[in-house]
Length: 512
Ligand SMILES: [Zn+2]
Image (cartoon, rainbow, N blue to C red; front, side, top):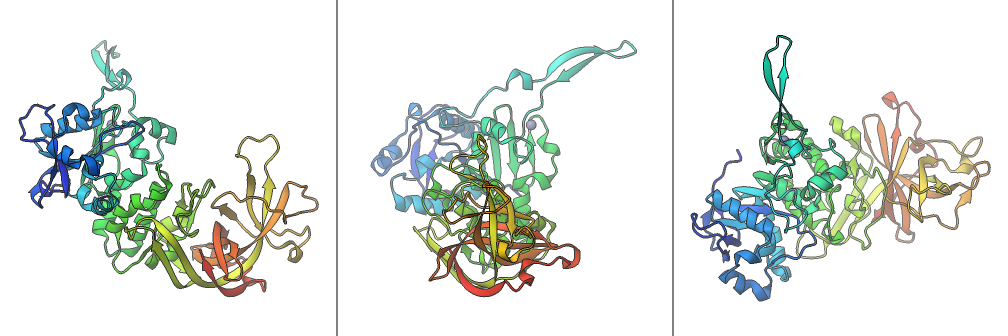
């Protein structure tokens, strides 16, 4: 299913000349004329090292000749490998896209899905933090089998081979982020996720071994990956869901959530690239008749808004997405675990309309603005905020430790003035104290509250989800999301919810 030997060439490729040329021969940039030929893509970290690129001023020189010594080691190694496979063309982003021409950049970026999908194979310089490190390496001695002479109980001699277990980061969660950063810097880059998922086959140059991913399986030299169940392989799972389950809407919704979860763990140099670097995947996933709005899909909007932030951080320094989009935070996001059980999502939200405006030519790229008009039921809640314990180094200054609990407004509550209603509140980002906060008697000065409104929007299984909202502009009823509240309804919905009280009200607001 991954086997396609030749396809239409991208607009520009590096021409390596006839197979049989010396491996370190000079190359040149070739502008194709729609012909069909096999080519290879390179996936690599740009890193901090300066390397050769193509710009408007150097285009004609690159088309004439690129000498071997001008190429950084990663490009040289990839070219040698391509020549050994008897393939004439290789596509390398920094040389095949004119870096200082926004029109060409947009044109090529929008062709990214085809460029990677049509490649014979993508070579991934997975262990290289930059283009000067290369693809080829030698495994550390500890990962190579060492022979030991042993004797069994009958005195028979045997040889035992022992080696250390090679880390395998394609299995999310088995290795710490630090390990992945150190061993596989390429896999921490946001742009690379779509390169990996779109390519029919990827050959990774790891620090200790070569490993392989295609639409159907994964494999590696030490044979560990060969035995992994396909369900744990992101690439295999993505293709299965995309190609086999085109008509299964719930599966496609889950696939997108998984992509978002993976993607938000990755790093990017420019905050504004958040939508650009995933737009190739969005274009492929594109569900028929569904509109893509700020990284979410209109036909599954309520489910797509069920993301939460396990460790709240900051918003980007410059606005890049409406607050109901996962792209409005810099942190890793996670979809609520109830969704994984394939349970039906009940919506309590009427989406009356909504729109996003693209900032550039890429209609799935950077945004200039976005909103949703909704009609829903609201209730007023107070969030208890604990000040950072003195001397604690756990959180950066200025910040708040938040005990993730929502309380009824004190004047309407019982006894102490606080009645616990919430199971968990996950904030999207740190919120700062304001001057009108009130301290609660008996709770000391470390407990303060601030009032917010909560919008009921979904239930899945026995859980109710509401959005914690903060007012941005009262006259126009503009609110922004600041967190997700999860409440356990109890079996059969027995538990009384805040929505059942007379404090709740229905209205229409604009979510920005
Ligand atoms: Zn292995």
